[in-house]
Image (cartoon, rainbow, N blue to C red; front, side, top):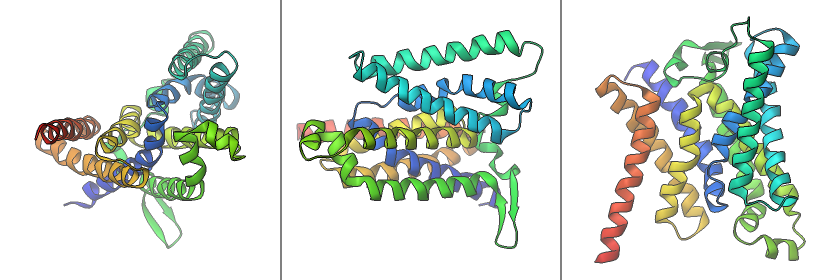
Amino acid sequence: MSIEALYIILTGALVAASSALLGSFLVLRKMAMLGDAISHAVLPGIVVAFLLSGQRENLSLLIGAAASGLLATFLIELLHRKARLQEDASIGISFTWLFAIGILLISTYTGQVDLDQECVLYGEIAYVPLDQISLGSWWTGPRPLLISGLLFLVSLGYIIISFKGLKLLSFNQDHARSLGVRTQVWHFSFMAMVSLVTVLAFEIVGAILIVAFLVVPAATAYLWSRSLIPMLILAVVFGVLSSVGGYYLALGLDGSIAGAMVSVAGILMAISVLIIKVLKRT
């Protein structure tokens, strides 16, 4: 295995693990498409950041995207709590509205400028080895690998610290409120964490891959689990397997690495469904 291949697999595995940990709670709360919503809702933030800074530098665009992602989560909650819409309807309305605003801003204010959000923000995991960074004498390697490693540590730390609150929030909010748990605080902290992971990860691996990693490994683990901790562990395992298997599938087919990783994740879920059906019949 070449060092470039190792960089790609490690980056994919770390992003998959981070996404699977948070995605497990999204699946349990029936908010699986939140990652997809955020990946579309960031567009107006990208455009506004470009208009204010006048540059296509990644940091300013990421800040704008993160702000827009947080706005999307706030709108989803506002529509769900105040307008009493179902959560899936709130997600659909929020991200389509923000995405439409982003398109309107691009067509109105950046018509003469080459501002392509796919190029300036959305990443591609195959390019990981090309984006090198050096931090003194203790790190020389791909920037995406460093970011994905830090992202995994932050996600894992958040889950460990917030485990009790997130568990109560996911299974019985009314019981949590009766115990004095501030469910709104836990909810918004979780939504902020999902926004952070989504924005940073799709700058590294691409929007399609991060959306898949947030949903498919967690949903596959849900099929096999009857309690939360085993589900979290299995979700991480399925995510890592999708990353490793997807790389070698892409290598064999000479195709898209991100597409292959998503395909392997889907294959693992399909196999799980078939095995569970067979086991239930016996």
